Length: 393
Image 1 (cartoon, helix red, strand yellow):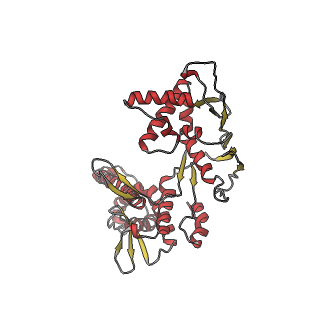
Image 2 (tube, rainbow, N blue to C red):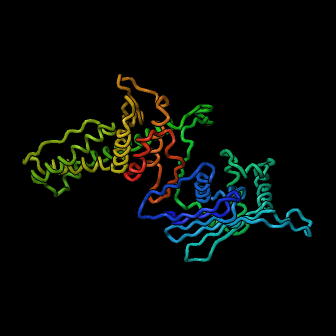
Image 3 (spheres, rainbow, N blue to C red):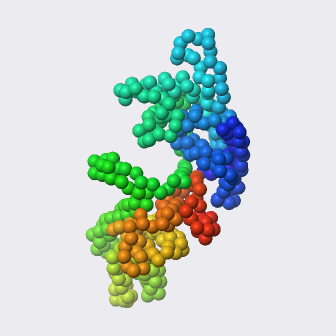
């Protein structure tokens, strides 16, 4: 899915924008002076994909329009409505603002729902009843913490259910999107049983996530290899394949660089390929096929690791080299041989690692990638390489 057209009218009461995206070009750059709403535009797209509809109640605008390449159209309108003084019930009094959400895929009937202050207050009371505490609905009209975000999602679910539009929420959430925000360097506190109160930085999380990914694939490789080894005799007895010397040597020549690359990432130990022997051609043929099959479990991660390592290497971190392993994820070594704490890297170096890692490992295929202020902390040379890096990924 790709975004084809975006427009917003009277953002903050002042700004109206419309842009079309040419899908022959993968990258679209949005520029403008500070305070003109660039980040807000990205937040709008993200909050639609998260079905965070309360965000739009607090946003000043009149109309938002999105069209995607698969003919999906989303329209959001905001309007003031007058209170009905003739109605005495608090529950029936209209809000001073109403936000309408509409979704169309070109094939079925338009799905729509709305929110207003009355609906938000009513749903908030229900959430408070279930949570057995009084909840201030104003907490959900600004960006909150994880707890309030969960409660806000519950409020939206209740409002959607009352209008029989649960499917609309699911459709919004089905939009594949990743948003890499401007504040990429942060420290947060983990509150769980094992790490209660522990502080962790964003670069530490990247290192830990990469370690977990590599360790998981390494474990899968060991399991797969053990299964193959346990059935090798059966495979050998049932195999009718017997390669010629040239065929065997071609397979070996193709396998050697793959093995060396996996060794460089610590994903396999030493594996020696055997020279061809006419007397044991059938055994060697089965052996080389088994070895090829074993390392095939790395086919996805090795491509990403190769790209990650190559792009980091091209940045030429000042007097530092970066290595990778399932034992430590990512490690930085100074030219004097000392290993450095990744938190001691410059802000620009940390930003490069964080962004490139997220681009390669966290962004799903066929999804929309939003990046706010990608140039933060990057010197001019790295800024010039940025688009090329995105295109390579």
